[in-house]
Length: 216
Image (cartoon, rainbow, N blue to C red; front, top):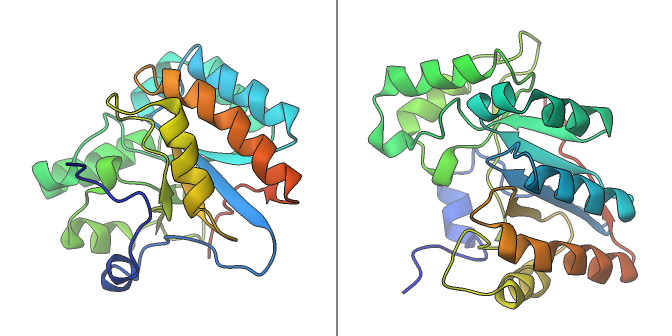
């Protein structure tokens, strides 16, 4: 039995209403996001694919990966995409001491200039979130914004197919949905199938793909 929601239920969004789950709009706009990179081969594939469809996206990067793949990270920025903080070492907030967790995010902020943060696995405690939302990660007027998601492709799940991932997104995304893919080695077989077809399908319906702005 799956332990995750493909479509984030309304009641979960209501309980955690201080997080950003989607960016509702009447326009045909979708927000693709990619977690866990940058990766030396998967992220360039994603960037090449986005370029083919003139699509923008937001990459939630792990600090240590940015250090190891700085040229790939620079390419994300050069090509006009947004970046977000995904901790330095992909920590699970539910299993990590509060101070260690916040310190790890601040460490990642040395490499990732963004006020956007996504907790790995979507797991962050109320205490951690409250403290994080009081500070600015990029020394700007922007306080930290915790970005969750409306639709999960589930490309990380090795028990499902690329076709399943594609159906997850095509069947659940609506105007303003924040959609999660992963630019990771584990997800690549499913991502490689689902991402181009997602872009082609929604572009044919008149949708555009935007990056998430640094929110006030």
